[in-house]
Amino acid sequence: MNVVFLSPHFPPPMHLYVRRLREAGASVFGIADAAWDVLRPELRQDLTEYFRVDDLHSLDQLVRAVAHFTARYGKMDRLESLNEYWLETDARLRTEFNIPGLHSAGIDKVKRKSAMKRAFERAGVPVARGRVLHPGGAPSARRFVEEVGYPIIAKPDVGVGAARTYLIGNDVDLDAFLGDRPPIDYFLEEYLEGQLLSYDGLVDRRGDVVYCSSLVYGVPVLDSVRGTDMHYWIDREIAPDLDALGRHIVGAFRVRERPFHFEFFRLPDGQLVALEVNMRQPGGLTVDMWNWAGDIDFYRAWAEVVVHGTTDVSSAKPYYVLWSGRKPGRPYRITHEQVLGRFGDLLIHHERVDDVFATALGSYGYILRDPRLDRLLAASGEILAQSGTGG
View 1 (cartoon, rainbow, N blue to C red):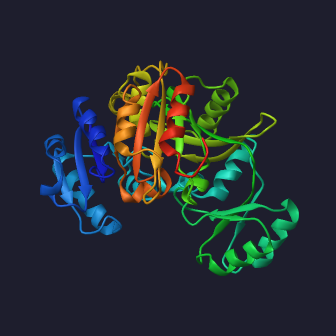
View 2: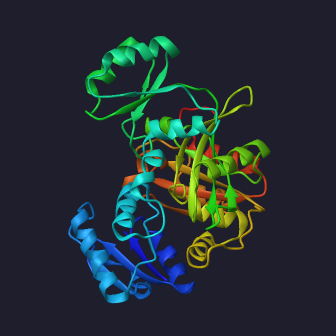
View 3: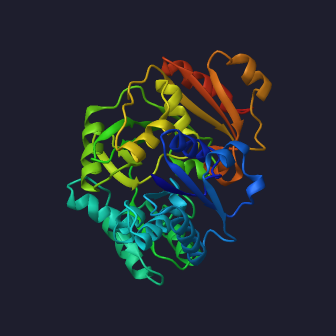
């Protein structure tokens, strides 16, 4: 099997997917804008060939790269980046070269929040009320507020994460948003109170969920982007209604041969409301957290699905695994050295976060593991406590 991997060097864990593909028997062909000699040695070893482009945003250059591989090695069987940012580019290249997977014709419902919501509604999945706001659409925004009331959320109809997302609580906020927003389509959505959580996993070639997991967020991602320290954890058990709704969405969106990350709110009355689908694994070090929660190798499981069609991987989790992220310049009550000394029995990993992801995750993260969630939450509380605050 010939697999093209776009941007195999970034984010850093991508090289592990490449390695597992090679170990599963695939030939892997990398395309990126980095010089060959700056790639990590193990990635250079695992790639069959590498094609450097000047600009990963240039479709012409990417087409030339895939055409080069095709001329030398025959048809490319798969093309992937596992990166939300390149999802549309992946689809265009698959369409251009007739490579199996998500094509351009199906990209709207997994990239555009308005199309995603329509797909949810057709599948009978509960969603928050929403409306597309085109540039210059101030009257439409005011009518939407009249329908649902304040507060509302405004986010780019096509966008990654919580960047350029607004929480609008009154007429002053609305006027500020309308004056400040970029000239792109936005999606307005009623604000919901509840617990943010996810249903995540891996689907094989037949459309069966072969691995599943759930993230529980200590604070919504939007709050983290607005300044709150982020902590979230891998739940050991998935609620039956979340599992059932997640599998229903897998079928409704016809997910095949890829990881997924679906986000929900659980409202105070217990109802689940779908927020969005992402056709890739969660961000940050979540895949490594899956591995530590269940003593598995998700990188290998994904590669086996791509090369062989399915895999045998357990979704059982002997441990809770929690991320606790600190942001720079804050007067944390205990030092980094004290964190290492005080929580060494829980701490499984810690590292500096790349600047691209630091706004939401924090600039330095600690990953804690234990069979008991209360121990991890208590430790995270101490790690994130600031001088002059309670707790």
